[in-house]
Image 1 (cartoon, protein in one colour):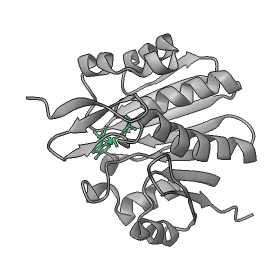
Image 2 (tube, protein in one colour; image 1 turned 90 degrees about the vertical axis):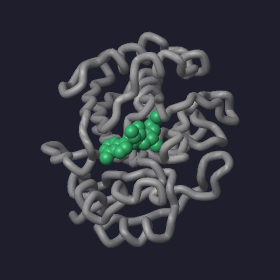
Image 3 (tube, protein in one colour; image 1 turned 120 degrees about the horizontal axis):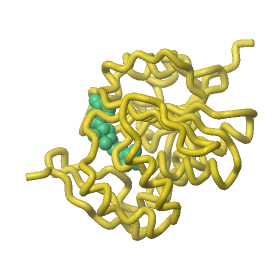
Length: 224
Ligand SMILES: C[S@@+](CC[C@H](N)C(=O)[O-])C[C@H]1O[C@@H](n2cnc3c(N)ncnc32)[C@H](O)[C@@H]1O
C-alpha cells in the first residue's frame, strides 16, 4: 500500500501526507500559499530584486513539483530566465501527480505537464525562460558541478528526517552558492540558524507563510 495520501490544505490546494513519516509535503495551512511565500516571494523575488540576469536555482526535494511549477509560472509572468535543478530521491508516480489540483488553482496546465513529463537526468528547455534539470538521487550523493544563485531547501522537517539537515549537507549547499546567493527554507529552528551561520551564511529570520510564525533566509556574503 502506498504510504502517500492526497490531502486538501487550508487554501484549497492539495498536498501529500506521508503515513510512514507522519509528515505532509507542505504546510497544512496552504501548500500554494507556503510555496508562494517561502520560495517565490522571500527567495526568487528577493534575489531578482538585488541581482540581474538569469537565475540558477537548486531545489532539494522536488516532491509534487509545486515549487518548480510556481517558479516556471513566475518566470513566464516576469520574463526572467530561470535554470532550475531539482533533486528528488523518491519521484512520485504519474497517477498521484495527475490527481493534484494545482492547475485548477493556477492554470498553466501545459507547463505543469511538461515539468512532469520531462525526463530525469538531463536538462530540458521547457520554454524560452525556463530550463529544468530533474535529478533522481539523494542529496547525500549530490556532487554539484555548477554554482547556484538560489537554493530552495524543501526537505521534510528536521525531526522527521534529521539526515537531510546535517552540517555536511548545509556546507555542501553553501559551497555551491554563488556570492550573493540565497538559501530559503520554511524551517526556522534555532539549531538550523546556528548551523547556517557556521557554514558561513548570513541568516535572517523572516515572517513565515500563513499559519507559521517564521522562516529563514540565509545569504552568501560578497567577499569582494
Ligand atoms: C517536503 S517534501 C518536498 C515538497 C516539494 N518541494 C513540493 O513542492 O511538493 C520533501 C521531499 O524530499 C524528498 N526526499 C526525501 N529524502 C531525500 C533525499 N535523501 N534526497 C533528496 N530528496 C529527498 C521526499 O521524497 C519529498 O519529495
